[in-house]
Length: 611
Image (cartoon, rainbow, N blue to C red):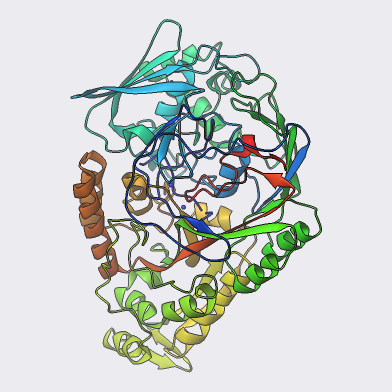
């Protein structure tokens, strides 16, 4: 799940998601980098914040033409990954370099601007004013210009202003966005006469303004307008300013669901504004990209990119060994790493990035509304065992992750846990439940007919299955029954909040507001944004609001550490470990560059080439 880049995030999901369109162009700018470095066969991280100009030069080497194959690790569910349901890394990886983006996260862990598409300037701090000047040549592959109309739709789809009612009469957001952070602070959007200069003026300061506009939810406005029955994309503004609720609902309905891929893709809808375009999609099998001959910037190197959808990591490794794919990025697993390192003609690296594994409970499940149950779980979940058995074989220096806001290589990282849950304490788990009125019924604690028993959802892969088994065995000793809820469609259920408890990973980025949509109280139980567990704490809400408007990075970091301290008390989520990211590729391809953020391995796909 990814953290939405809108707010300020693999499936791993907090809140600013971006994709790289323009990748490592040397004329791009980058700020606020905190990078995890790579080394073959060993996980290493470099802490501290830096500032860099431009991304890594990955364009050297390799010839143009030919086909490159990649193993997409999960299902491609939508061209629009800006909705809460489709805010998935698989969608991000599939549309990197297809959907245009203003900002993206580069290989240095910084936020960069795609200079092929746009120039971005902050022209005022009071009020905060940001001007976007789009390349006059920038256009969707059907010839329609990229600019004002797209930016306007992007804003209204994500600002949370427009409301509707559900079947019960309850008010909900009209556009099912993954995050409103930043967008809800924009007072006005103005455009030049030619539609190529766009000005965002904010009501209040927003710390991560540079990374606000990404590819997440950036869709062709003229397509959405046409599907809603409008004569032109300019009519979107008229509908919004005139509060034409009937038209806005048609726009929202298509934005929410019209880009889904369950029935395939439509090239007239899923347009390209980048170096590649989608030409074919076979559900659950493959996605094919070809060079976009209408792209105004530097052409992509490979003629074609074939993404084979392989959700089983073992199968993807075998496909790499057989030459069926050339690039894979499987989840960390010691046995799999050993297998990959034994392959001839294959380069494998292990990297420490912005991704971390965690255990979450769903507060819409009555059992978890009892803090005593959450505390007992924290005492029995064998975090150190997971690190020792599952992660240290990949990274001998791996330690417990004691913070949800920052990774160990970041200078703001602090152990905010207090140390209470570092080690398994079965006796403490039992006494906590008993003090809350639970008694043993057979092998499971129970109170008022409610057993301390729940289903733990996870993706069916070797490491997650091992995590499940470790949790199940340890918590059984504490009278807690954990039922295996492995599901190939787990990501869809996660986005809808349809689970009791879950282990998954957030794949994030360097933006400080990336966590807001994950932990701030959602608008309602049907519009969760990225807070899939429906966690709510007014004190956390207040602190996160302060983070959004705090332009001093040190002060914002301190506020986030205060939030994390509170969440250790609430135990809504239990951080487990930082991901050691595996990236393997055949030596027959070049320019494969690790990216520590949610951009993922396809962030610079336009530079992939035959060796």
